[in-house]
Image 1 (cartoon, rainbow, N blue to C red):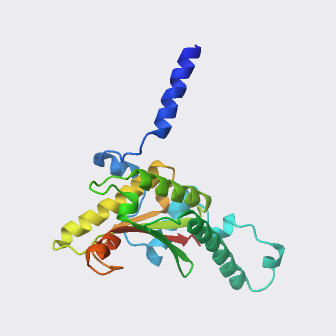
Image 2: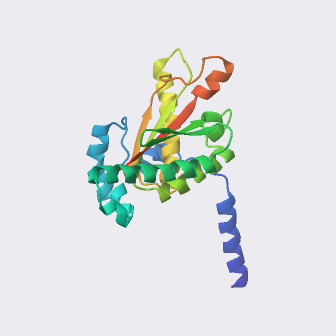
Length: 225
């Protein structure tokens, strides 16, 4: 019995240490069932909110414990301060945890933007999550679970490519691959918007180094109001 327990423990230990590998592509739609494959516009968030709440999700106002002071004064100002405080906490935790090459955290109004350069999350010459990428995405997952009153847009981008359809497909593959990782690690798909934008919105010049920066996945995290 003791030997059997040791064997089971060893198998579990090896499994926990094994490198992450994306599920077979044929299974992706199963993992991503419930995700929205569209831009995270205000209208899209409004339409998705009942689905999010039906899956057990809560708004920021439902998860934030208001202080006595916030019970007084202008309700609109109190609500705005609540969102700002919640998203500031999220931003600060992401910023402190992601001080690594190829990663950056920015603020955009009440939204938080995380830029993941492709080489920081994927193998250099293969469309697969790398060991560093596993570590980086795992860190993000832990923080997203803590700040779960949020929607997450996962958008893939490429460098300039002659074939726009190929660029869009390549960028969507990156975005879906990250979405599958999130889903496999417990992030609810009712929070997700997944898009591939091809070579749109470059953030660097289309030279040798700029191309590396333009191949990226951006996470835009927005509070559920």
